[in-house]
Amino acid sequence: MNARRFRRVAGVDEAGRGPLAGPVVVAAVILDPRRPIDGLADSKALSEAQRDELAPLIRAHALAWSVVAVDIDEIDRLNILGATLAGMERALRALQTIPVLALIDGNRLPRDLPCRARAIVDGDAIEPAIGAASILAKTERDRIMRAFDDVHPGYGFARHKGYSTPEHLVALERLGPCAIHRRGFEPVRRLLQPELF
Image 1 (cartoon, rainbow, N blue to C red):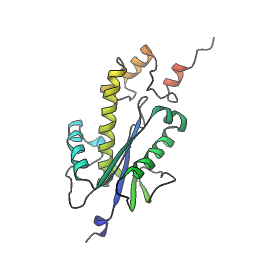
Image 2 (image 1 turned 180 degrees about the vertical axis):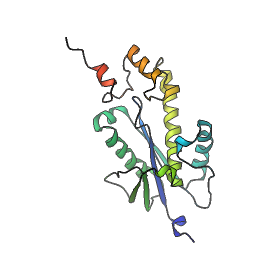
Image 3 (image 1 turned 90 degrees about the vertical axis):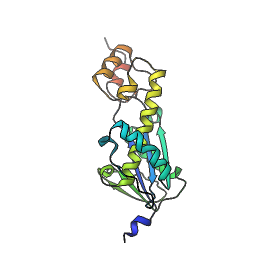
Image 4 (image 1 turned 30 degrees about the horizontal axis):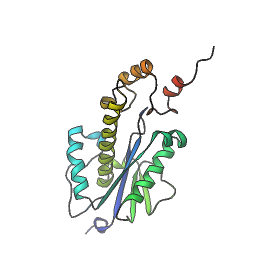
């Protein structure tokens, strides 16, 4: 018998560290070992349709889950790593059930956590709870970026979700940065600086 199956273990992952625009979104999930969910994996290995199918199952079957978004101002103030770590701490504290252990995707741990924690590189492909968190974070961030596409038309946020695709870079050069662009990221920073003559 695997004793760990009966412990409150939270998986934590983020979506959106690399884009030029939009928030970074962090999720924490405590899976219920009595209600397994087939198909959990790193969200990047799943299609959008698969993620959209799994996300409501995770919310319905998990013992606890939370999703938090860290906005652009905080990303610019803390840098993307600091903002991501802050989001991880908040996501764990927002869980309605306190975990005994947090498994966090990556190689860094936030400083002030409500429980013991372990960092796992590529954890979203190894640990089902981290995979579940990656799916919730990705689907919520995609939803946010689709909504921003209506607020800031012309950039294509609904398609590229703020990543530095050729379409996005062309729109950025043509339109200039908008309110959700990360001012500390290149090429946004360059476009915000006045040219020197």
